[in-house]
View 1 (cartoon, one colour):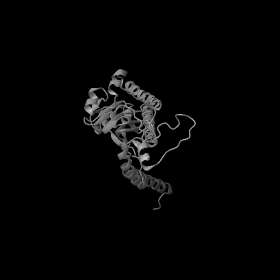
View 2: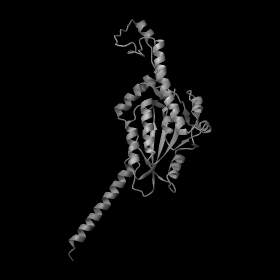
View 3: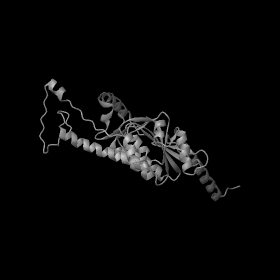
View 4: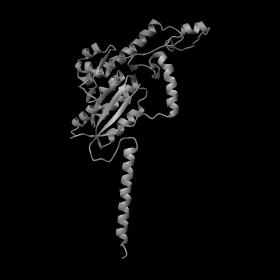
Length: 295
């Protein structure tokens, strides 16, 4: 019996569609981004790790999750001692915008201090492990002085400048009292921004934050007693809390954000660089300018 061409065509299209769905599902399952076509409601996890020196990739990930209608809530898994002031502030602002669309929970890993804590306070809730290291609410700027070393090797520096502050922070000479006062004013202003941001988001008296914001660190349990975090728990607790806040029932599916891409060259270069930087000031040289960084 001769087959009807229409039925044959429909059958063929259905088969092709089925194969395509299986292929896409496989890519989603094994492609490394943790995505799948499950009908379960989803919570996205964005890792924020290491010293914060560049905000671009993290902000792209945050915006991607914000626009993904399949992701109901987001967990920021923070394991960072902080870093540059500007990238920390930019990530904080991106999280604030994300919070307008979906619930956000910050989950503290081993360390979520200084700039890492600034990002955490942008979330709806903060969950810390009892032993997480947090706090270090402070601002710092580093300037090296190699004047003595240059004298020993017989090297002198000459500077031609258009203004008396143009070479402020030069490593070839001691900073003047006037220059130090100018830098201190900048550090104080950036520090004031930090403290006011925490007081606003944590709904705590400004003076209370100033009392805690002297660079000291806290364990997760201490931070909860002080009102700096909301709950004690691990990543899974944060995921369940995010699902609960967004109205999910049961255990949500997890979608992992992509970690920062690192080429072999960058990895090797970074390994060599970090060995040198460690001897200077705990990797502080990886970020220029003012820093929200655990010292």
